[in-house]
Amino acid sequence: MCDVSIVVPAYNAEHEVGRCLASLDAQAWDRSFEIVVVDDGSTDGTQEAVKRAATLCHRPLRLICQPNSGSGAARNRGTREAKGAVVAFCDADDVWTSCLLRKCLPFFADTSVQAVLGGFAESREGRTCEQVVAQEALRRVAEPVGCGAYRVPPPGGLKLLLAGFYLGHPDTLLIRKDVLTALGGFPEDYSTSEDLLLWMRLLNQCCLVYIASALATYFVRSGTRSRANIEQSWQDTVRIYERFREETPLCASLRRMLRRQLGTSRMSLALSRWRKGESWLRLAAYACLESPSWRHAWMLVSMAFTLPGSEG
Image (cartoon, rainbow, N blue to C red):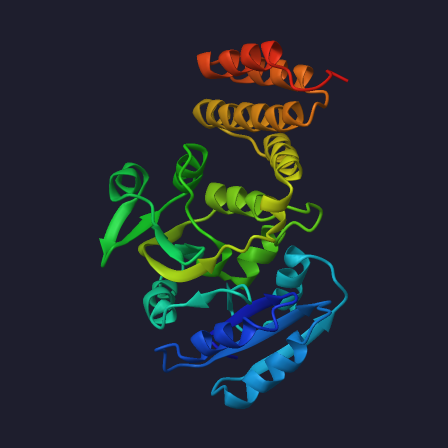
């Protein structure tokens, strides 16, 4: 059995997947790992690009093909096919730093650590910005364990997430395979924001180590579905928060934090519908009741007096 399986979901990534696989092959890790590419029904030359990259790769590389089912389904398929006890992920158009495995995998020697998560860099239109949780915020819920890493017991990570801190991207998540399976894997019934539910379940239940440095680069493309359809993204986010609230017993403080996030998401969805002249008032009023704030009340009044379209 290899130490870790790296799952690469790929969809129409003909021009990027070679760069991704080269960054995985270049890992400064001398123990075994495998790369599992799941082609999610690509209609371009992604499969051929993967096969070309495999001839240059020094690590075991497998290509699995399936009908287009979404990134969550592709990650779950790769997880099921993985031979490693630990599973990691990297989207086909993103890249890892060469030290990611070397920095992350040693923490799994502690059997109580169920996942390791790192910061990442976001690259947009040629500009790169590091996305790392501030050490002051981490110290409120985590214990430093050296070299810029923090041990985060549950539900400390969830507190950070609901406070508005973006902890990570699937590109920098390493998790024990059995733990990911027990959490239900990546949800497959949302077209956007599909990993949010997994993040909340993971951060609420699992002990993880967070490494406060950028370990991968996430490239933001203009065609990203969540950015192409803002309304659908907010709608899915509301549904995910509601689902998590229904399935998860939380303490009073976490319930309040979740209500604030849910109220903000409802108001954002209402604003998106208002801009299109669609029905929005009931949704905005519900947001104000769920998460009362001057900001939400001001937004509701402003939309009511400058309505761009009919209430419907």
